[in-house]
Each structure stands twice: as structure tokens, then as C-alpha cells.
Amino acid sequence: MKRLRATSQEIVLAIAAACVLADSSFEARATEAIHRQYVSPRSTSMGGVRLTTGLYDDNFFGNPARVTANPHGKFTLVDVSAETTWSSIGRFGQLLKAPSDYVNVMGQGAGDNLHARLQTVVPAYYGSEVFGGKWAFAVGILVSTTSDINLRRSYNVENAVITDVGPALTLGRKLLKDDSLSVGATVHGTYRLSSNTGLTLLEVLRGASLSPLSNGGEGTHVDFGLGATLVLPEALQPWRASHGWELHAALAAQNLLGGGYTNLPVRPFRLANLPPSQGRAIGVGVAARKSSLAPGSSVPLQNVVIALEVQDILNAGQGSFFRTLHLGAEAQYKMLLVRVGINQGYLGGGIGFAADIFAFDLGFYGEEGGLNLGSSQIPSLTARIAMQI
Image (cartoon, rainbow, N blue to C red; front, top):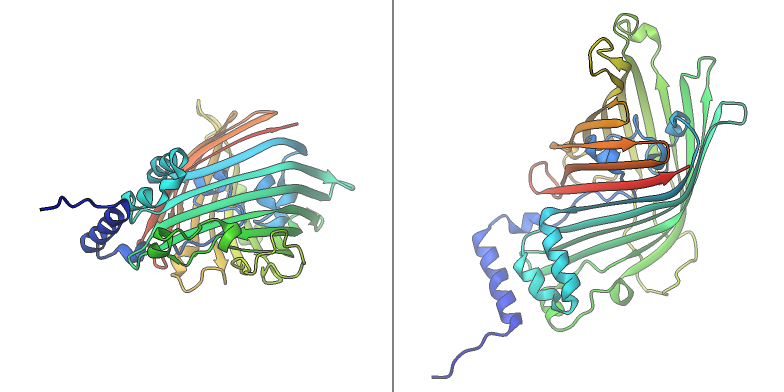
């Protein structure tokens, strides 16, 4: 009797089939996460809130009115952030060692979403209290690459890799006699390159390329966002005088032109396909702030903020409303910042360190990868390092 020898492709198919039989929820693990053009580790560690709390880099794709809240002006020399999942670290390490063995690596991790994001905001300049003290602005070049790779029950290889590159300019102004109202606008020009997300495992086994330059899409557009923040009148917060808490409300919208990547004729690779569009996103939120908490204690906390926001209205697809909910808090002790939050129902937290020219953020959070809350958590680790003058 001849000895049977299984090829690597047959082994992968066997592993995939075993995963299907062992896990009836496998198909639900297809990535349906809400894609955002930019997310900061500070924001994600605070449950994803940014419309009422965002500073500096979050001005560009969060709430542009928050540019007036930046504590001081600065020029950024280095600003790099990255995130991934525990399951992705080992897989990406294997892919780096043996990129040609992509299928085997995918087969070993069938069912796990391999998630990674790398972002830079360099160079960037943030001007605070300019043009008479009422105005503020921010300008920078953002580069963001997000990768979500998954082997589905249908034997489709989800290879969602999206890269966004382009400049952004944000301008904001304080209004009213007490500066309680701020408004802002952001205009950004973005080139997007994306991979093809519709390949089958059989096509991959036959040598179909996973490179965006072979079967992906590209496009460029100019789009803009608007936002506003308001410190609520004292009549609506009678506890302000006695307890020191101050309520802020926020409203913001991004990609008001539709985010189609079609209104600029910049397609350097001349790809036939367009990338996925970035839909309009509307968000509202409220935040409670207090300059100092427990001032008489040995560990007085400063700049305390607690925020609740609803984001990505119109950009959440057919998913549950609960995917748009975000709750978070931050407090400062000297140069240390402590953060905690609930992002789409998943717990998150982190710490930050802020000095005059150096900043470091480290945190974790959970992102909903399915359409309904609790169907598929993407537990991510996130970090950022920045130098500014």
C-alpha cells in the first residue's frame, strides 16, 4: 500500500473544515467592525470617546471644535501609534519570517481576526489662542494603515487592508462673551489604497495575489467635517457652583461630501477598482469636567473628565445601535494620566505620560467585530509615542 502524503494545501483545507465543524459561530467572526480613518490610543483607552474630550491629533477626524481646547501650541516631530491583538502578534511574526507560507499561517489561525493598525501624524503643528486669542488651528499629514485578515466559514479569505494618506487642516473659534461656545471645521485630502476582500481560499491556493496593487482599489478625495462644543449654562447645571462639575455638550459630523474617494483624479497605480467609501458619520456627546478632585488628599487628581457619546451615526451599517455607544473617563496626577472606559460594551483602560517634549500612551480596549453587540470582540493592545516642541 502506498503511503499517503498530504500537501500543505490539503492540510490547510482540513484545518479549515475542522474549524467549521467545531465552531458553528465561525461565520459570525467575519469582520464587520466600524472602520475609522484615525483613532488615538488616548481615545480608545477611554472607551472611544473623543467628540467631547479629543485633543491635538483627535482634532482632525473627531470634533474639529475641540481644537480650541488644546492647552498650548506645539510642533510635532514624532507621533507614531500602533495597535494589534494578542492572537495577531504570533501570526504576524510567522508571516514576517515566511511570507510565502501565508496559507499555512492562516490555516493555523482559522477563525481568529488578525488585526493591526499603524498610524503617524508627522509633521503636525497645533496653534492655540491665535489671531486675538479666539482662534486655534491644527495642520498635519496623517498616514494610517489598518489590516484585518480572517478565514471565514465560506472559505473566503477576508484580507481587508486599508491605507489612508493625506493632509488635514482644522480651524476653530471660540464664540460668545464667555467663550462657552466653540465651532470648528476640518478639510482633508485623502488618498486611499485598499485590498480585495472577496478572494476565496481556493483562489489563494491557486496563487491569487493578496497585494492591493494586484487586485485592490484606490481613489482620492477632498472632504470635510464640522463640529461644535458648548459649556451648558449654569441654569441647566445648578450643582456646578456647589460641586464644581461643569457640563459640556458636543456635536460633530465627518465626511459630509460622502467619503467616496472620487472627486480628485489622483490614482497613481491606475487600479481599475475604487476603495471602500468612508461614510458620513455624525456623533453627539456630553462630558462632565472638574479641575480638581479630592484636593485635600495626598493624591489630588486634576483635569477629571467623564464622557458619554454616541458616534458613527450613519456609519454603523446595519449593526446594533449599541455599537455606537462610548463611555470613558480620564484623570491626571502630575504627569501621569489614568484612563478607563467602555467601548461598544467592552472594557478598556490605559495610562499616559505627558512631559514638555515627550508623550507616551499605553492601553487596551475591545472593538465589536460583528454587527451585534457581543458577537465578536476584537481585543486590542494600543501604544503611542510622540515628541513635540
